[in-house]
Image (tube, rainbow, N blue to C red; front, side, top):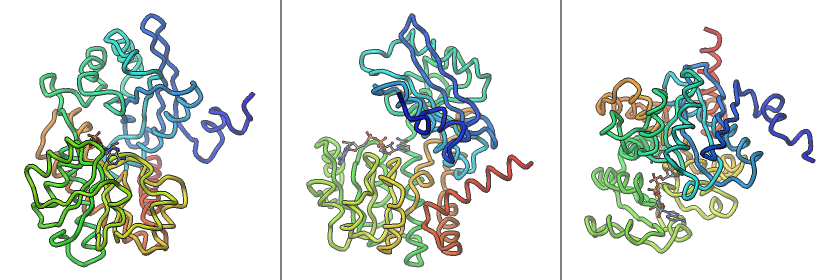
Length: 360
Ligand SMILES: NC(=O)c1ccc[n+]([C@@H]2O[C@H](COP(=O)([O-])OP(=O)(O)OC[C@H]3O[C@@H](n4cnc5c(N)ncnc54)[C@H](O)[C@@H]3O)[C@@H](O)[C@H]2O)c1
């Protein structure tokens, strides 16, 4: 039996991490769908966040992940200046074997039954084509393909937003919002990372990259032979004279092993959940490394899917993603005033915005 203080219900109703508004368990036996939709907050508007399709070890793990991710979306949407609260859904199972049109349509009907309190989009294991199917059952699905009225791939604006976060970091640290002649290491040059490299080169930065996939590396070096390639992330974080480290692959990049050896003075990248555990933000601050909070600088994607609900307009979206520059600067300023790491300052500002919305 699970310890009563450990269980999902405890997390939901009693712990400090809780405070979710609604959690919906969904089952469609015909298609094998088992899903959890978690709505953390609708204080700022309908909860917005993607659907993760993942082979969780058990239902408890799935619910816990949905709760955690939904909460994260409240903060992300608040800091992106969106009129959206936070929510997230998880579908339990291996998308390779379980995903079917029937299952996605059944899922779409569950999303629809919430009447717009939750708006879904892509996440790990779900793609633009899947949202096209979900959207056949509900208008509360975004991140669809351009052929179906959607905005398509969000990595272009995500990279643009991360670049704004880097410019703000440069402004804060070196008094000039440019990456010219700065040495920037990008770990993971996939969809977001390769667009980021283009921004950096256009701004005059020296770029060092690494990726486990050779094709991803070659796509860049074929176009830009002046980009330096190192063997792996271990090598990248130790590059001499590195100014900025941009984790753009997986989560957990900042941990007890990596932080002590980082040569960079700034960390600013696209990957979600870069801090491996609470306390890492303080370790970075103690080493004098400026951390631009991941959920703030990688919000270009969610800005795009939110815009799609109004009828996608790239220029409007880009203008909103450009505000990541000012938001990042405001976080650094608040961190300095309050004497806390930037990650904690971002949380405080987001909580303030949500509290003000609740009061009004
Ligand atoms: N795509 C978006 O709009 C978006 C929005 C917000 C956050 N993010 C986050 O940004 C990160 C990158 O997203 P993406 O869409 O570019 O994904 P992607 O899968 O296209 O790219 C990730 C790249 O990282 C590489 N990689 C994987 N493990 C690695 C390792 N150990 N070392 C070096 N490289 C490694 C992969 O080979 C791949 O080329 C993810 O953490 C994602 O959650 C993406």
